Image (cartoon, rainbow, N blue to C red; front, side, top):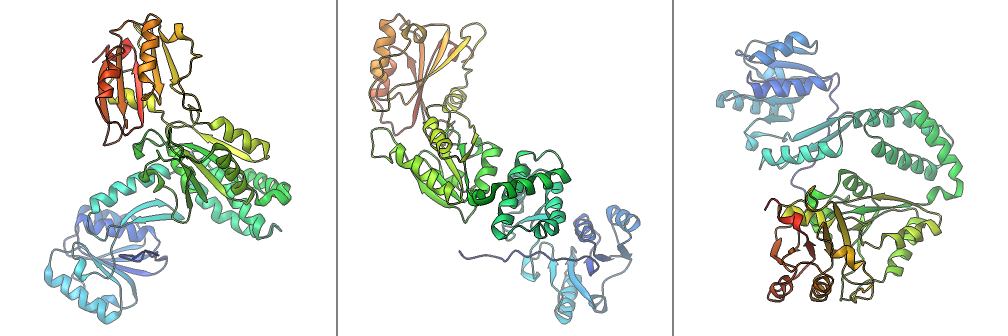
Length: 458
């Protein structure tokens, strides 16, 4: 365990006494929060804001005392909050809390507080807290927003179902391995159908599936996830959710560390990078590892840059899993061609100049320039061509396209590291782009875009 700045804990407060000192809007938020837990909330202030008055009038468990707090008010209190601008009142609260042994939080006074209030994602009974130890509440709120996008409000119903169904699952006769498999199936269904509430029939179906699995109950599965072109924010929500549930993540070299951070801390991360013209893990080894890990009962996320179904050798891994009788789910991603078009601020298609979009790879699996293209289609001025892995073979591609009749002034762009902070664009035509690229040092990965639609709005 790495060092922790604070220890995240959760206080069950239903039926217990909580006090709030102060009458500001900040105090009202603490009152609302504590009351939502089922605690009895006593508020002490001679000058309550309108929100506090509304809460006291509308909630049976909120009592407003129109006076200053005293030391005796801390008797029997489980937790205390203060949101006061009065230094003397804050000092009295601190002394009274110490004498009574009551944990106290004083807003904007971290040095006088026993605990820190973080940003909250409320999917009760699932509750998530985010804290920066008071360093940046705005940053904590931004992180909360990202978590809320991963765990929408509809997830509350699934969290409640897990709570309600646990006794019947324990009484189902399933052993420990079977119960674990049930909850894995439950989690998979929850994330798949996250926008609808769970039904009793879901529980019955999951129990039946788990029992039917028998000896195969320990078998795992593979989720093939597109990581996007490089910007961690371009991975899909479904891809992020798959990572959050992975036991093992097999990732390529082109997958940025920021995306790997979406995986849970306990997940094993294995680099199986495949880079053109460089030593790489063989595809057969990757496929065999996927099968082996899944047979060991692991949920494996195979994380590929861009979209795994576009020149990502996904077919070989899918075939290996199916041949082994194992489950595989595919989560598509944003492909590099789309990110490259965004980098130059252009559309890949146009009603006037490009009604067709074609993706090609500029070298075979052996790294040589392919000679079996439909050259008439590639030289069609009414199409846009996206060329993957086209750096080294760009001169040969340019020569053949010109020979096949593509106009020398056809716009062409090379985009390096699209969507990342290191993104770079080299602009030219199909005739002069190879020369311009030869003058630059490229680290890659790169994408080449060719076509008139690319300059329609530039």
